[in-house]
Image 1 (cartoon, one colour):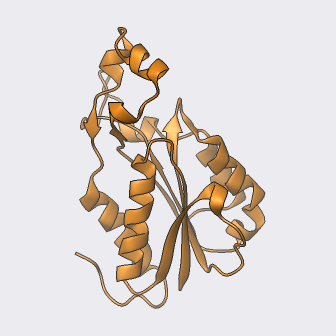
Image 2: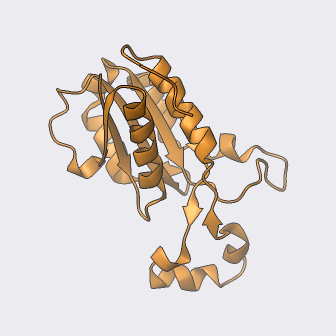
Amino acid sequence: MSILVAYASKHGSTQGIAERVAKTLTSAGHEAEASPVEAVGDLSGYEAFVVGSAIYLTHWRKEATRFVRHNRALLGSKPVWMFSSGPLGTEATDAKGRELIVTAEPKEIAEFRKTIGPRDHRVFFGALDPGKLGLPIRVMRKLPPARTHLPEGDFRDWSDIDNWANGIAQHLPGTSATVE
């Protein structure tokens, strides 16, 4: 089965997740490729889709939202999974006890559930490498309170990502094995 893993990533964290999902799907016996949404051409050759975006200020990146809206008719007729990346840190809840992963769901996902009906949407922790940030953001991070809201490091849970991708593979015809 031919699967496109399309993504929108600003600093590479979401790209890494998309590439890992594509690799896991390929290891399970599918033809999967990861590509930035703005580089995707003709979608007619794909039988399933995984679409992901980084989250910024409770929204998907504009190019990812545009991709889904522009292709909603086709995406709505095929199996689609979605993921978002962005929460930083290792805590599952914030200071008020709210689940970070739940509250991190981008606002566009409700619309996508109605218009294309993805089989699942997952929010994964992201990564922050200060060396990849532009000067204005690096300066802002040093000013309180921003410093406390943007921890540095790679918080992606690769085992969780692999398990999610294996779950996708199990729902597609032609899966040969589960990748460990």
